[in-house]
Amino acid sequence: MKTLSLCLTLLVVFSAVGWGQLGPNGATASFRGSLPPPPTADLDVEQEAALQAELAEVRRDFVRVAGHPLAADAEIFLKAVRYALEFHEWYDKKPEDGVAKARALLAEARSRIDGLRRGQITWAGGSGWKVLGFRSRIDGSAQPYAVEIPPGLTVPGPMQVPMWIWLHGRGDTATDLHFLHGKLTARKPGQFQPAGTIVLHPFGRYCNGYKSAGETDVFEARDAAVARFHADPDRIALAGFSMGGAGAWHLGAHYADQWACVHAGAGFVDVKRYQKLAPEKYPPWYEQKLWGVYDVPAAARNFLNVPLVIYSGELDPQRDAAEYMTGILAGEGLRPPHLIGAGMGHKYHPEMLKEVQRLIEEAVDKGRDPWPRQVHLQTASPWHRHLFWVHIEQFAEPWKEARVDAEISDADKTIQVKTRNVAKVRIDRNEATRGYRLVVDGKEQADGESVKGTGNTTGPIDAAFRERFVVVLPERAGMNPEVDEWVRLESSRFLKRWRSLMRGEAIVMEPSELTPETAGTRVLWGDPLSNPAIAAVADQLAVAWGDGEIRIAGKVYPASRHVPLLIQAMPDGSRVVLNSGLTFREAHDRSNSLQNPKLPDWAILDISVPPGAETAGRVVAADFFP
Image (tube, rainbow, N blue to C red; front, side, top):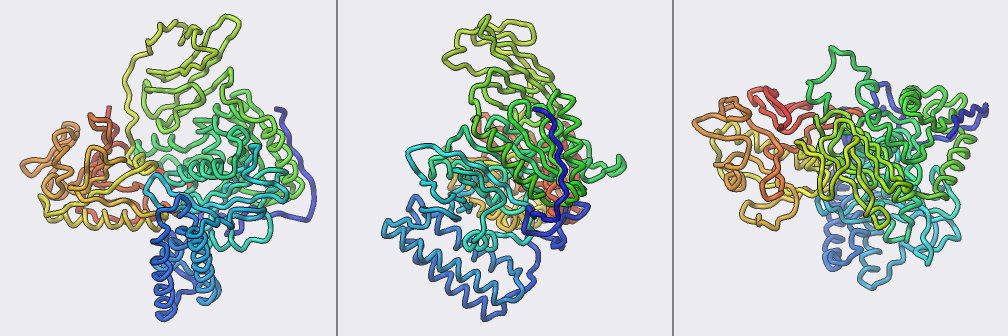
C-alpha cells in the first residue's frame, strides 16, 4: 500500500471517546489512585438499602432462568448493580442519577427474565443498539457486550454479514453499570457506520487496555456475536481509538491472522517509549523482558499479514507512537496509510473518519485469506506464537524476538521456512499442501521430523489469568503465622481485585473438591501444611519446604519471612500457580501501558516488607525456568 497522509483544515471535530482526555502518563483526569475510582455522588444509607432489596428480589427471580443458554443476557444487569453497590461506583452529578441508572438496569433484567421464561427473546431483534451477554470461560462470569445493527439488515439471516469490532477508549468510571446504561439508552450511532455491517462493542473487562482477561474478552465477545448474528469470520475488522487504539495495535499485531483489516487510532505501542523511561528508571531485567508480551514493535512484521490503517490527530501527543511504528514498519518494507487529522488533538477529523472507513470497508470486502501462501510471524512472547499455519513450538532463547517467514511454492511443491531464534517450529498442512516438501533453514525435514531444542512456554505467572483458573485457599494453619497472615491478606486482595478490575468472580474451591477432571490452572495459596492441594503436588514443585527453609534454584531462604510465588507445568499437563494473583497492582492502573506482567515464572518475596500498591513484598529473587 502507498503512504497516505491527508490533512484538511475544518473546524468540525469528532471525539473518539466519551471519557477523559489522557494525561502525559497515560492516565485520565478522573484517575485518583484506584480503579474503579471513589464515587463522586455516593448513595446514602436509605438509597443503598432500597437498591439492595430490589436487587435481591430480582436475583430471586433470576434463579428460575439461570440455566437458560441466554441467561447471561439478564445476569449482566444484576452483576452491574451488585458491583456498583459493592465498590460504590456512583459517578453522576447526584446520587439520584445513579439510583435511576441502577433501577433502569434492574427493570431491564426483570423484563429479560420474563422473556427467557416465556421463550420470547425480543431484545436481540431489529436494528439499533443491542446489549447482550456471554458466559466467560475464564471464571464463568456473565460479561456484557453491545452490538449495533444498521437499519435494513436482518440478522441472523441466510447470508453471513461483515462485522467490525470497535475497542472503546479508556474510561475510569465506565464500569458495568455505566457501560450498560450508556449502550442501553444510546440513541446515536457509534464512531463508524459501515454499510450492511454489524459493529461489536466489547466491554473488555473494563479498563485494562485489552490485556489479560480483557484480551480474552474481545475474542469471547467476537465468538458470541459471530454465532448469534451469523457474522462472517473472514470479514471481521478490528478498530479502536486511544486505549482502544492501543488494543488494536496489540491485538492486531499479535493475532494478525484473525482480521480482515486492523485500524489503530491514537494508541500507545510499548512501555519504555510511552512512559519515557530513562535507563536509571528501568524496572528489573525480567520485567523488561516481559514487556515483550504486549509491546508491538517486536511484532511489527506480523502486519505483513493483514491490511493496517493508522490515524493520528496532528497535534495529539500520541501521534508519536504512530510515527514510531511507521518507521519500524518501513524497515520491514511495509508502508500502511497513516492518516493525519489537521489541527486535531486526541480526536478524529470528520474527513479523515470517512477516509478511514473507506479503507477498512475496502479491505473487509476483500476479506481475510485463512490459508495465505506467505506467513510472517514475529514475536517475543510465547503467548502469541501462532499465525495461520505457522507455530513456534519452542524459542531458542525465551523472551527474545523470534521470526518465522514461510512460503508455499506450488511450482516446486515446497514449503520454504526461514527462522530466527526458533528451536522448534510446526507447520500445519491442508489438503493442497499435504505432500509438499518442507525445508526449514535450508534443511529438508522428513515426515514427522522437527527442529529440536528446548524452551519453556508455561509462564509467566500472569499467563494463568487469561484462561480458566480455580483458586484453592488454605484450610488450616501453616508453617509460619507471619506467612499465614500474608497469604490471608494477599489472597483476599486478589479476589477483590479480580472483581473490581476484571469484573468477575474467581472460582474458589476447597482442596477436597479438586479432582483430576477439574478444569483450569490451580491457583494454590499457602504451604504444604496449610493447604492439602499444595501438599498433594509438593514433591513435583520446583520449590521445597523443610527445616524452616524454602529452597528453589539452588538457593535457601528463611521460611519465617519468605514466600515462594511460581507458575509451573505439572507432569499430567495441568498447571499450578503458587501464592499469586495478577502481578500488576493498583499503582499500575494509572496507565494501561503499565498493566503488564511484573514477575517471571518464579519469585521469592521477603514479606517483612509490607505489601503495597506496587509489590506484594520485596522481591529478593526471581527468574524464568530453564
